[in-house]
Image (cartoon, rainbow, N blue to C red; front, side, top):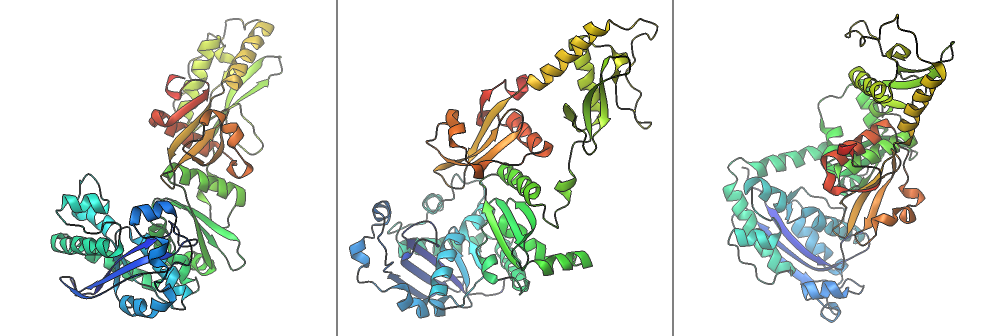
Length: 464
């Protein structure tokens, strides 16, 4: 591949987020792909206390950085080293976000193409037990000196990266560099910072217009990759061009899991009704079970198409599903099929064969009592459960609270929180506007992943 210069970078910080924390140490090794041609490392005075647990991890104390330069004093040197280079790091988004924020605070307008040695290692060295820097280097016989110090980790990352370059027979690195090059064609009317801070994690993203109004909500397993795909494709028809031109800002929310991203997207679309979201607006169940009294005083059950202002007792996705359900209900409660209406469509098989029409209809009061019992059973068949899954961080769970047959709340909780008391934990910000689609998602997920479900009311779905 074309010869490039790479800046292999490692930093130590006071915490996990660039918005509220600072760099305490930085190491930069410039490589031409085979050898180091320049290097730089220094402690940095973060001008804020270093938390004790981080001092324990890195060995960098407040005393050690007291007389070190603040970032502004070395910003010019760091900018000169990084400018025009491909930025390489292990879990690159973390290091890049801190360096980007620190350079910006120092007055430098900098950006760079990035390569992540974690993601590249998964592709080039698949099926390893772990891709943390320590475990990965152990698997590849790479020595690390001064673990959790910037220079030691940067040197190990450099050796790892050189091994990746040598073993990359399928040119994953070239593909990644070329993919990053596409980002240079991103629209100029959207702040570059909005793109730079996008994570590679799962969640939802929000496109806003010039007045700050949300015009589109999307979900993604990789937020950054999905957002950029909106602007780098070849299909630029009139409608899409109008859509892209209207986007003036981008925001996002990480969700931890794809299920949470689905549910968050549905909730936001239902709450906001963005101008450019159409698919989920239209998704509703097609068929429903209605009950009504006919002119002769009999209570009837009927499958119908769901229309505006129609409130069925039960919903279905398909005609077949509705037919099987009503037949079972009729059998369980001894209902007369002549008083039940199945959905008819000329293109579909005929309705189930009814009882002999010459047979006298059942006693009205007795029969209506059976229908009433069937309806009450449907309404009373309530189920509540909580789905617990991974969160955005290791110290939290994501939760989906399904209360009395519908998704009631979603959010994140500390791993120490007692799920049995979830009602005491729920706040207004957790509550969602659920619909048939969201309820189906939660039910299907609970069936497929029973070990992640805690039932608070009713029986597990597979036993219902």
